[in-house]
Length: 253
Ligand SMILES: Nc1nc2c(ncn2[C@@H]2O[C@H](COP(=O)(O)OP(=O)(O)OP(=O)(O)O)[C@@H](O)[C@H]2O)c(=O)[nH]1
Ligand SMILES: [Mg+2]
Image 1 (cartoon, rainbow, N blue to C red):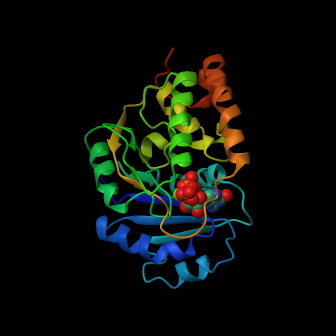
Image 2 (tube, helix red, strand yellow):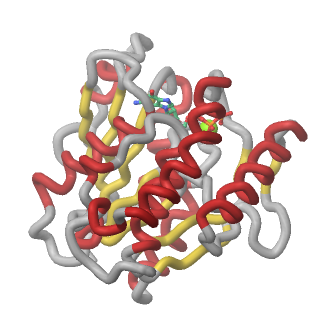
Image 3 (cartoon, protein in one colour):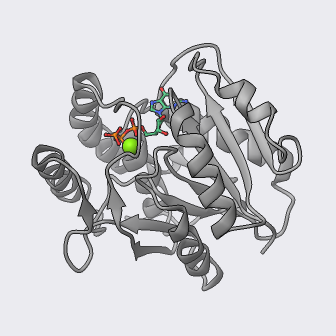
């Protein structure tokens, strides 16, 4: 497998970046990192451009304002696909910048891809709850959301709302990303659902999830509300018109 791409959306994460990038390149020395920054206004672009790896293994996609997590990932994936889709068997990892997703777990996700998975989901809830330092209400919200998604969509995964994943680049390039409409956390569910409906080989890898290292959460009631109504919308659209959501692949009944 060629060196993996790590796509990370950032909004006001400047304080976390030195620690995050250092840990990432310690864990995966050949990683290529793309930040998708939504005009954070906290010095993120200057910091990235001053980094010794900028331009060789560190890239920056700047957007004009806070346009949402989902569209940031779509823009980042398209950036990678447009430039590198011809590479044999590269991996695309998506993760947060706040160190909730431990860079030391990236090799475990990559190993599962090497072993034959098309998509690897990091899970906090397989063989117990592996979440540290989260307030109880966040944990209950996350567990409740996972249960809701499983019931409504039928997906069998233990942590269907998680945002730490690894894709085979060639498989990601077959998804019709123009059909992804979720802007907040529902994005995680929508993309996994598309892949699952297409019959991708999806594996779960256990991780330990920690509360953010520094900075403030971007979680809002708007994002929670979107996730609630989007889940039945995603499931219904998939049932009614499964072939609209992707360009190729096996489609589940
Ligand atoms: N580019 C971009 N990144 C975003 C946006 N919203 C959130 N992010 C980033 O997406 C990742 C996840 O957001 P978080 O605020 O950590 O959300 P969370 O993990 O559910 O909540 P906390 O860990 O409690 O903060 C972080 O790296 C954020 O900086 C956005 O609108 N645009
Ligand atoms: Mg976070």
